[in-house]
Amino acid sequence: MPTAIDNNKNFGLTQTQFDEMTEQLQQGDETLFETLFLSRFEACMGILMRKYRASHPDAYDCVMWAMLRMRQLMMENKVAFGNLEAYVVRMSVNKYLKQVERNREFPTEIMPEGITDSNEELELESLETLDSAWSKMGQKCQDLLKAFYYDKIELKRLTEILGDSSEASTRKRKERCLNELRRLFFESVH
Amino acid sequence: MKLNEYKKKHDQGVLKEEEWEQMAQQLLNAKFDKELGAEWEKKLQAKGVYRTPPIQGSRSLRTVNIRQYLSVAAVFLLIAAGTWFMFFRSPLSPTQQLASSHLEQPFRMNSGNTRGDDSIEKNRGMALEAFSNRQYEKSLNYLQKVESEGQAKASDYFQMGLCLMYQVKPDYQNALKMYDLATASDAMAYQDEIHWFSALCQLMLGQNQAAKSNLEKVIASKSSRNQLDAQKILDALL
Image 1 (cartoon, helix red, strand yellow):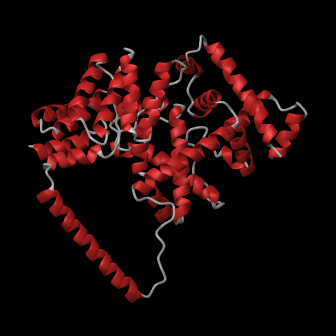
Image 2 (cartoon, rainbow over the protein chains, first blue to last red; image 1 turned 60 degrees about the horizontal axis):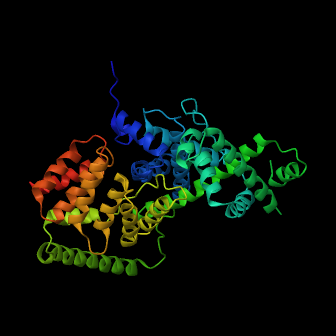
Image 3 (cartoon, rainbow over the protein chains, first blue to last red; image 1 turned 180 degrees about the horizontal axis):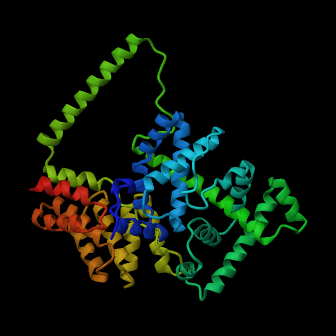
């Protein structure tokens, strides 16, 4: 027997609408995701500020981080329909608590994999170096690397988009671009 | 690991492919998260959500009070003037005013498949770029080139309809024709949007019965993003 789920917990979405939104997101159309999630941004900030006494800018940064992670998780099909609003709030809170180095740990067992903040280790200098290397790359390589690594578009679909003859040829092209980025990146390190 | 440690390993030829790929993945995530975050920040600002809360000044209470009274009075005056202008001076009916307010928020076109070297794809790419920059006349010109080559698809007709609606001198009649052509080209593509925008065009043209029919389709569609807005306009029409 199907379980009735409160739509308010899922930004007003039904399971079908959620599936459609995920599909749209994976196809590169972020309109619905942005409309829904950004409309709840302030409410999520409010929870952090009221319940956890986060400052306004801290709450803003943590919710922004959580929304970006949520986008990534949805693109990777790692988040299921159930209680999306709680996911976002929980991620924001967890981020905030880590940030202020409190000993109080939030339970993470219900959170999907891959939401740890791996970027924390990255230095600002590395990003500046990347920007410099990136600007020297060709548009086609930029598009391909962004599509594969950030927009999480599968090679099979990329082959169709790029009009390549086979998936193997797209993979080869991606490897060449990645090597090009590697060369330019380390050349830009002073 | 620090950047210079990676550099050292790279220079020594011992930085493995997988290590670099993992590093590149992290860097690209951070780079594009930053860019997307900046884009969202602008959108949030448009909704009145800012990273920094409004600063409370250190002016005297009396100055603040006088300024607050003046601000409130100015707002009331503006609202009164606006209401008078909207209802007594505007040639638009209330439903047309509602439609018009939606037409002031341009639809965001999906970048779709515009990669490629041939002239058709280039024209599509230029059309999308112009559309993103709100240069609707220019965007329309590029798409007309695609159409003249007999290569127009449903998405091209749909975008042409949008351009005709958003351009400086809107042409709602031809926008409707473009939406019909889009539907004729692919009966499934953009149907929710086409019903919605057709309704807005029909309202602006005073074709209320046709608009009503399209609004009902929007409301009935589970996938439409404009159900609530459509219901509001329909309520105003009845």
